[in-house]
Image (tube, rainbow, N blue to C red; front, side):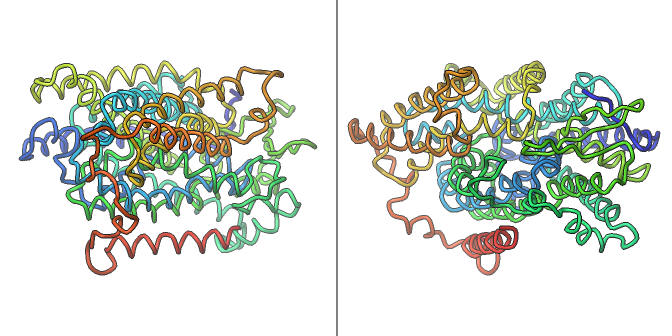
Length: 579
């Protein structure tokens, strides 16, 4: 990795701010978790894993956002903004639509069935074997997607800022995060995530503000936007402001690939992934379970402006020649720009994954770098803590309790804590392997695109179609998983022998095609092997489309129906503006 060339060094104040933040957040998380468990009227295990079902909508919404936004987003979305403009912001804005689906279609069943985990829901809807498959799938995805990639990006940024060994920096944060997760449970996780969301957004606002101010020059913040538009003067730069690209766009991500492919990834991630949905499972009641995700959907508007846009602005800043030792490198046939840095009189390629670090050390005044470091640590800790809590819950409820159903609550909590520690160690070991992806954000979604389709098909049609049977779902889970693994392995390892269809198909479109395959497999196998006598849990699927809106909800602007329409209308306007 090329060395970071900073406009100033990290000050003592920056280090003090960073260390103080870590100490306070760990202490607060432990205190809140212990205090809640002592007061909780529910059983010790449910109080630890699901916060005693006491979460209200603001905490649910902010916790959903904080668990989702990690160092991966701060670092990779800035890198994406530098390389491709606003394009990958679609992964943020499209999430709003799937959060509406969570509020309307999935949350009601999760709350009414009183499940502790999503595999628990899978068993109630289909059967035990389907539960076991989803448990294994959820554990692996939490370790790789939520913890492993977060650790990787944390290593890139923190080692760049403070000049310490990447493994050391990640290990220290991992230990600190595991401490309050293991001691405090879900209440500690949700409380710290709420605080970390505020810190994260404050840090993101800082970097956005100083990006505008730097680019605006004598005109200040007000001139930043107009100067950005003036600097993006070539045809391939003008497209960087567009969210929806044509079929021949060099990025390989046309508008139809996003519209067709994202819902497959999004329904798995936002509606069927234990790490994310666990906040909804801990809701106080159905109203809070519905409104919390809709609040998160509104917050998801911000990342495009706070994470992606600053990366694009840094591209314009470098292009303007503001830094003598940095320059843009546009190869003649390149789809994305590169970044070069002067070193000892020569120019060398600088990894664009370091874009966010460069922005911090070059744009922020001395002293505020520590605040940004705290924001990055907040993003990392919030995602990792949520994943660790979901892993401990899955392992305790879905694996351990299956074989030892009489396990007392105190031992079940202990088993969950041990599982969390083991998962953390496994994720740290995976960091070097995951570092092989050039674009971390694309790498994550590439993996998800091949593993999400069977889960999305089984969950979506499971609540919308009463004919989905246990044997049909089992066939789909196994067949869809094998198809995804085969396609992924063929694409990555096939070389010149890879079939053209697999080689040339964008991973988002591939997700859609795999979803169609899994849906067809579910319908055909369910009709060929229909439900048996007694296999008809009517309370776990909608009998008609209108049933999803039958729940009245709160009156006024807090009503989930009004908020759902509001979210969709706002997103439609935004997409029209940045089309």
